Image 1: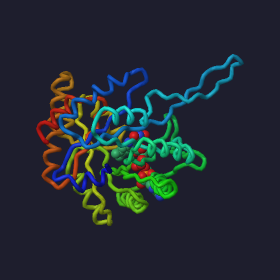
Image 2: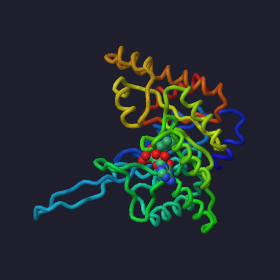
Image 3: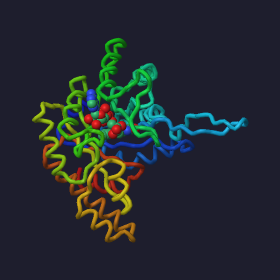
Image 4: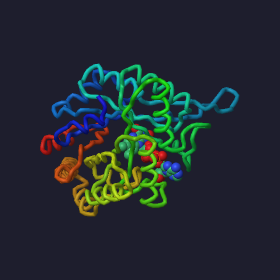
Length: 308
Ligand code: FAD
């Protein structure tokens, strides 16, 4: 079933979860048991993130170095297959243009269509570690909107049909000169065929509501699903703003720092804040709430229990 149909048919907002493919060496059984606790809340779909290959230089006998692609995780396609065979939820593999040629993407779309997957998230992806600016593969994808366009062309050529989600940034994507232009670029993704939007995590709902209003004023009418992640350590107060270009409210930062020495208290503060955000969102006309699990389940399970 397509996410667009789930969104239209669901009588009330529902939770969805996003998982990161396991590192190589982790078994299918371990993956399944890490997802199992969420099934109590019947998430209608599970997103699976995609990670571009990294590169390392290895010394050769003649003193030169050769470049080798290194993949640390199981592919999102394999993880989607494992989830499909175990759970009743739909899977949403993330597709990233970064590091991919159009031919490679077309092959991946063939695989997903073959597997009966009807949902994808179309994303651009990021630079490799050490690169300053995003550079597409020759003839590859500079923007996610080009990927959305290619998915729609693939459907016409192959008789496939995908529901396509795209990402958005309530606090602006770090490369965009301002939020208005970022929203114009978001609108372009929708005009090229995106069916719905999932946002980057945020910690202040007012930021999300303002962003949603601006999107509506700009003429974006597709569903906008908020993305949430509970803080689980005091260290994340420094890491998350740096990694995801977002703000964490002063009150939450102060609380986390005050209890930095007590891991359990920090975990509890992060979970409580996120549960309050979620409860407030559910009162404010969101179609669903998307949780970035990042390998953690206990805190999100507690939030789901109190909110859904
Ligand atoms: P785009 O929509 O292409 O936007 C990138 C930047 O380009 C923005 O600043 C935008 O304003 C600008 N832009 C877009 N089009 C134009 C244009 N025509 N002219 C000028 N500027 C333009 N990353 C992963 O590697 N794997 C994942 O699985 C993954 N999952 C994600 C899930 C969600 C819900 C979100 C929000 C992000 C995810 N990301 C993931 C991160 C994402 O890949 C990065 O944030 C990336 O930097 C941007 O991707 P995008 O699809 O938003 O790009």
